[in-house]
Structures are given as C-alpha cells and as structure tokens.
Amino acid sequence: MILIILCYGKNVLNPIWLKTFVTLVDTGHFTQTAEKLFMTQPGVSQHINKLEQACGHSLLKREKKSFVITEQGKLVYEYVKKLVLDEQALIEQMNFDNPYSGECTFACSGSVALLLYPKLLKLQAIHPELVISLKAAPNYQILAEVKEGSIDQGIVTDIPNESFFDVKQLGQEPLCLVTPLSIDNKASIKEMLMELGVISHPDVEHYLSLYCSQSNEQELQQLDINSIPVRGFINQISQILQPIAEGIGFTVLPKSAVDSFHNKKYLKIIAPKHSVVETLYLVKKKNRSLPARFKTFNSVIENVW
Image (cartoon, rainbow, N blue to C red; front, side, top):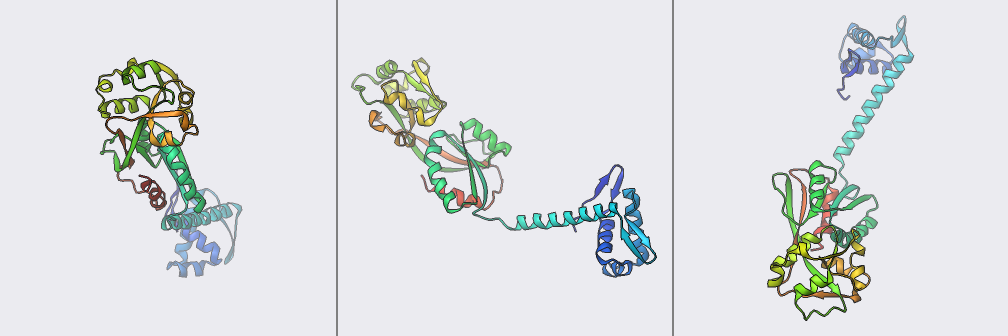
C-alpha cells in the first residue's frame, strides 16, 4: 500500500492504521486481521480506535465478535482502495515507456516546420498513438519554452547557452535571396534591392544579415539593411513569397520554404558568389531525460539533413 498520510484539519490518518482498517474490512475478522498483519488482536483494535479518533467518526459498529462498517467507514475504505489502484497504475505507467505512444511537443521556425511536418505526419500515420504538437516560433521563444518545460524540444539557428540546454547539430540549410522572375539582376545588387524593397517577415532581419555577411558580395557586406524600404510584412510562411511572385519586393528565406511555394516558376533566386547557409541545432532542457517516443520522433528529424 502506498504510504500517503491523509490530513483532516489537525488530525493525521496514519497509513499503518489505514492498512489495518482495510485488511479488517476485507477479512471481516479481528483475529484473521491480526494473523495476516502479524499483530495481536488488541493491537488491531487499537489501530482502529486511533483511526476513528483521527477521523472524528465511528468507522465500525461492533456487534459482539462481529462488526458492520458505517457509512463513514465505507468512505474511508473506498478512498484507500482507490489510492492503492492509483499507485499500481502509476507504477505501471513508469515501467512502460512506449516508443510509439504519447505526446511530443516541438517548436521550430516556420520554414523548418514546412519541411518537417509532412514527414512527421507520415510517422503519425504509421503510429496513430503518437500525438505530435508542432509550433512555429522564433529562436528566443523556442529557447524560453524549452527552458521552462512547456515544450520538449526545438530547432534553433544559433548555439544557445549550454549551461541551460543540451545541443545537437542537425545540419545546414541554404538561404535564398528571392526576387520576381522579371527582375534584371545585371545592375548593382545593392541598387536592385533598394529599388525592389523588402517583403518583411519575423525572421527577415536574421536571414538578410546572414546573407549579407556570408555571400562574399562587397556591396552587401557594406549594406545597411535598415535602410532598405519595406514593401510589406506577412507572418504566414506559406504566403511570404506571394507578393514577390506578383512582382512586388524581394526577401530572403531558407531553400525549403522556396521549394514548397506553389508558384515557384514566378520567382528568381539570385545566386551569391559564396553559398549562404544557416546551421540548425536540436535543443532540449539540460540533463532532461525524454521518453522513449522521442527516439522514434528524432529519427525522422535527424534524417532530413
């Protein structure tokens, strides 16, 4: 029996008294209870008396050598039996860690979500008892929620503080500078971007800064990205490229987001002198042991890059 001490006001229900009481009700005899618990019969009576005093109610109605359980006694008996069942269920749950069942909470950027979610749905179709909860969020939010434990894992693009997180490098994804198909890119790239203006989105500053620093284009390395005119803003990853397909503005996005766009034929990707990539890291809270289902879940993620 689980050793839980129940408190009613200032009274404490000793778990040993509760065990004696339940055994007495189950056997129906003081003598048999004493034998089963390796006690004396007066010892059994003493436990019952102390339990009744702590409860403030008679739990048994004595009739010579037999007894009848009172309504208050039934409540105590049923409550303790439920505690025992709950304890057994808890132990079973702890001993059985199903690698194909349970919830996996996860966060990443919108572009990574576009790439991963179809593959995770295929996994869920094979194992219907897996529940996949995927959130698109910026780096800072992902790290905050992993740290506080509201999500289990995340993918970020900057190495976080390893004092708080366990970090695993997954791979790299190319970044693309995307313009309308009709644009003439023979002119100065700086002039072209300033004339087009940027279609902004939650990660555009990060992607554009990375692109300018890695592309080995001297004009871009000297460009103040805050000086670029903004032609629009949208936070729906699947819609960011729509204005560009219609001839409005430019933006920078991971290749996976460009590849998934339905009107890709109306876009032009400006090839940089030097490839531009961002590194992706899988993070979880430091020293947190995740359930077995995450081995199944992570096998999909780790095979993407």
